[in-house]
Image 1 (spheres, one colour):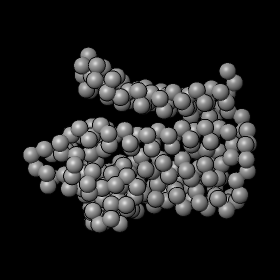
Image 2: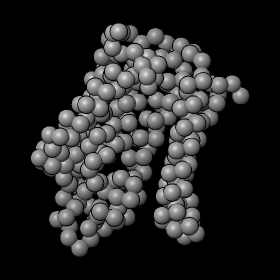
Image 3: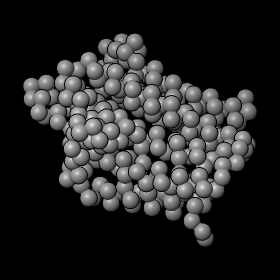
Image 4: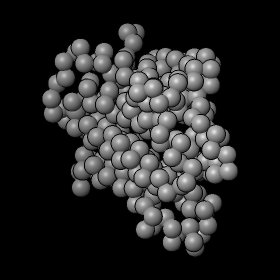
Length: 232
């Protein structure tokens, strides 16, 4: 197996392990044996190991150009990465019913407690929407085989993950309020007037945090990915 095949295999394993471990057919019997906490620890370990393997494989892979994206598409990447960073920062600082273990935040006894707040009024999947934007953005500006493998893998996992989480949460009696008043695609529910954007709940500090993350990724991109985005 050459380094490129190794990357493809590692990426496929990273993506498939998430879908398999999240499936009811595997998740339920495993939890019955090792408990919910044990399952989450196991899930986290497998996710970390497969992710690390994918990154190491990417670092060892040879550069194999498939096509050369036009220069202007790089601006598309920057445009997408700004909301991606804001969504990511918000997702890490906001309790969400779609995050891991988030079903516990759904309130059966008080439906009004499930009224979406903060970033959830923009998209109910802020983290997976952020990774989707990252993947799309990097597909726009990178035509090499290795980057395309990882970006396509992350995009499949992100989109599939959003749909899968919605399907799993649909069994919860309190999910209806969230499903009716939020959307997967950013601002869709607000455009349809199913929810009002909770800018106060999002908070200026989260927007600033996303901007700082965006600036940090631009200036640190050479260290992270080996490609400088800023002139030296």
